[in-house]
Image 1 (cartoon, rainbow, N blue to C red):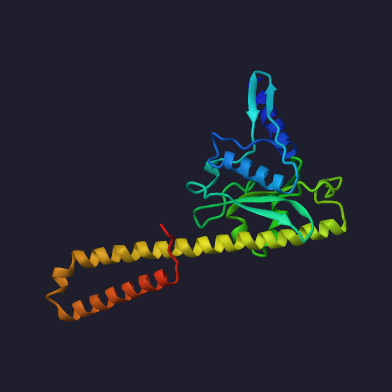
Image 2 (cartoon, rainbow, N blue to C red; image 1 turned 135 degrees about the vertical axis):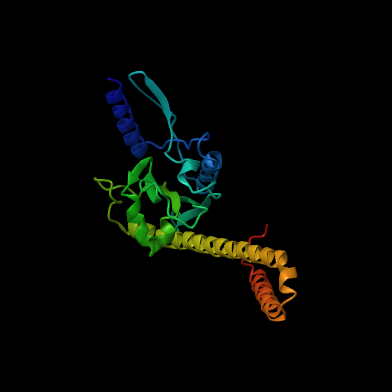
Length: 251
């Protein structure tokens, strides 16, 4: 019946997303084309291949082109522009990491897509939570959606695809992951400081508007007026300090 057919389609589609290097969905994910182009560009610079597959799944009457599972709806608001990092050691290029940070200071709601997933030739290697250890703290890890796309031909998955086969190359890859995670932590930390500063600025502007609206009332009470002027000076100094320390966005 229809419900069984629908369930079967979703199960098969989910499996294929785990094992096939699918395209990003340009209709649902704002940065889809940029992702594909940038990852391909970086790989070409290192004479490595980044291949994607067009896959159409049909089960019964349902026929659909499959994509990676990412969409703008995964984020709290419009997803921030993706950040790319080369995953490499001194002599080895392992692949490319991409990550989109949640614009809100919140973890990604969808547990299945939260954090970074390691992929090799379309296959998921381990689970996203396995990558969190490279971030030390999971606070920032949970605010990202991303992938570590491995293209090194000699870095091979183990049989259960929980990790790569034990080798000196795997150790170097794990070391490179630690460095990459540090970069994403820095970006998330900077974004947090900016957004906190912007929230504080909004509060300060709101407070100043209240003072402006009631200034005639306070003018008849010297003590109240002095307190208000002290508060205005405090708000002014705080904004000036944050501007000096570049804690607001350029725009």
